[in-house]
Amino acid sequence: MNKIDNYLPDQIEIRPYCKNRMEERNIEDTFLITTLFSKGLYYVEEQIKTFQGKPEKRYKLIFKISSKYSLIIIVAFYPKVLKVINVIKTSKGVEKKWREKILG
Image 1: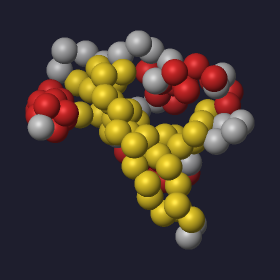
Image 2: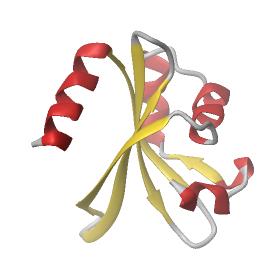
Image 3: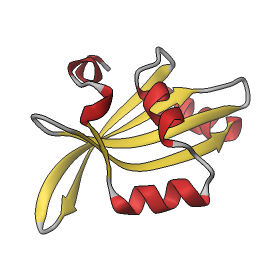
């Protein structure tokens, strides 16, 4: 996703909820940032969710991190900051579901 290229690593803000979930899932900040700027992105889905009473445009980004795992990163793009809302490490079975969704 080309929008990510408009941000620097120090412009990435991890929301507190996401920070807690990352700790529970043993996902390091550096791994998240490295993955965001990698070329392993293979799926993008736009979502509109309510955050603090207002609609927020979010993107579900899915990155290939190994032959067995993918990393789902939910982000929101703001003018000067890329906000990371959630991060989930998944198995290959989830990748199959997304491919089916894409192909219809």
